Image 1: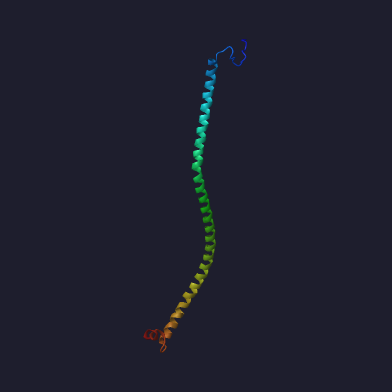
Image 2: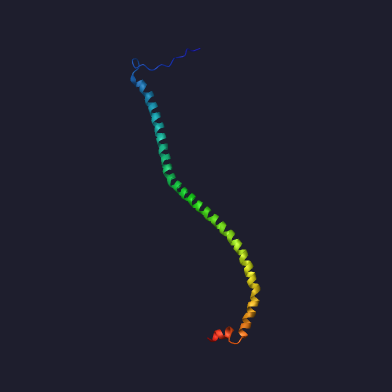
Length: 125
């Protein structure tokens, strides 16, 4: 088995600084790249948040409009029930009027025959 070498920090006494710097500078470049990538992503997220603001305002307005529509629909439903009830009453009354119409016409003809009454006197005035 080969003996394992222990990793030890480079000694600046024995090794010139030039050998140390390539490793450090490559790590710095990697960190710089990573930080730049993160910053770009943060900016992109910021732009998306800025765009999202007006959309959320629009959504809030839509929700308010939907609530108003629901309230109006509820009022219309109550009115429709009243109209249904009134329609039945109106239909019964119209039927009674239709049944009474022949009698009213006969009374009108009778009034026309009376002396000084009816349509003739109304037309002669």
